[in-house]
Image 1 (tube, helix red, strand yellow):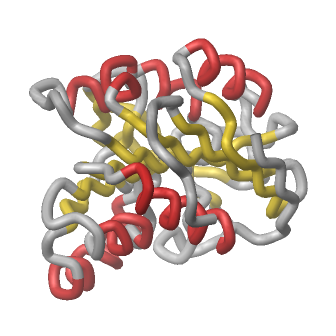
Image 2: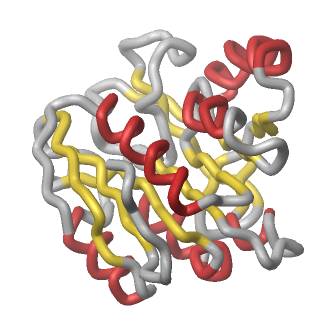
Length: 219
């Protein structure tokens, strides 16, 4: 296990991308994509199978045309990823332009002024029900909804060689899993912690890998 303490999330993305050189994924999934930066970077490593999910319609509308032009092989999808299929409320910070921020999501309670709307949602296992024999790099930055995303990803996680996930030390939203909950869940699924990067008060990014016979030699 490698413990790091870097107060920016730039290094965590760089390291996670570098890690893929050793893991050789055949597919990438990004949950809470915003501008789909991770998927765009993965498109330089993969020819197909880059999926980026963004729940916020204002954010999706802001970036969909840009991505269609500059990264046409990335599948940019306007759906919330959670633990069921159907519809779910997304909560917006009422004090900011919803197209300018990436901290809106399906968990409430963080902002003094909130408003919500119904959006389409699904689970990773339902959306990818037909996939098999893939090696997946999974990126999760879901603004407190880790329990819901992971609960709907049992099969998907079994195909992942690495997972990047933003976690919280304190309940910044209502009714969320904290870092220890995520760590326990991932360990129960057979993953080990590879790195942790503190980048904001009460938040950090964690990288998990599934042990298998490969050599990680490019950190």
